[in-house]
Image (tube, rainbow, N blue to C red; front, top):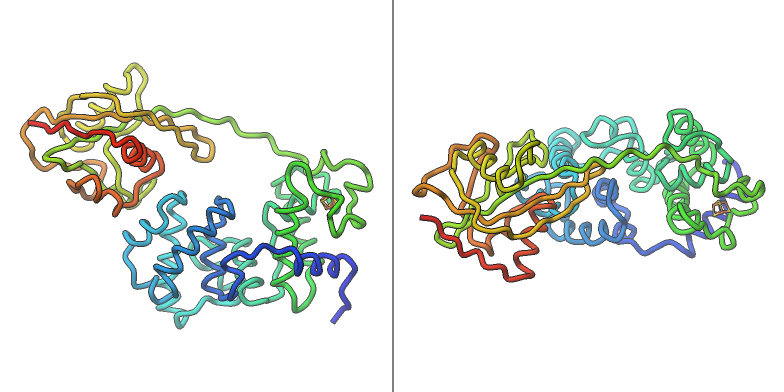
Length: 366
Ligand code: SF4
């Protein structure tokens, strides 16, 4: 085995002193590392920590998770977004119980065959969960390497990716991948930050080419930012005998199997009120009338800024079952029962608004 280099030693010593006490760093079980890594895709660490702790209370092990319903898994994931991650977790859990003796595999190759697991996540589970000598590159490491090694390629380009993975492999000490990979990520998150890196406290500053050349603001080279696309949507709540109408989205749709108040995009030439009436008719064959505006919520999904106009509606005709055209199921529920269902973020914001303002839903239809 090669003796550690000064960079490896400095980084590992810094990590031993400075690492954050994250909940998945208590036991280092492969199951916990897998769940934490999937949660951390697209989610800030503080938020992921809260969801992780809650998740482990509900699904403490692989077997419990594998035998749970999709509804329960989606409800526990509600608020984290990107629900395909939750569905893939459940699919993977069932597969692991059936085909892998109820355990998470330790090789990168096997991990890569599982739903929702790509090169980064496979490397993270193998190295952090099992301490296998497998490299990882995440956004923090890519930024750190761009500065440390003065990589003058556009961030996120395939060429930069190739160099980053080769560097990550080259730097990795035998037998200490768990700590070393986390040390790189932690240094990127806490010290070599995107804005205002803390170079004066950086344990590997003496190795950093961008610092030596005085070009830190130019590394990494940013990629062109994508334009934000605004979308106008409308939704509505029909109340009947103090019960609210909700429907469950189709399984293979965006936000598949989540619950919602019917609605959809405002089309050109119509306003939000007209849109909600049309959408109700198209999706449920309910004829409705707008009684009042409740609120407008705004939510950002990757490149989209969604403005959701929310209305209180009444049914024009006598109550009957809907004919569903964009959903797999429907329920009439009390306001308190809404907490049992998983909703997309915009609809959850609407429910939170109603709760916070004690908004009266007194619009019983005929
Ligand atoms: S010296 Fe500064 S730019 Fe270089 S790796 Fe450390 S924090 Fe990042």
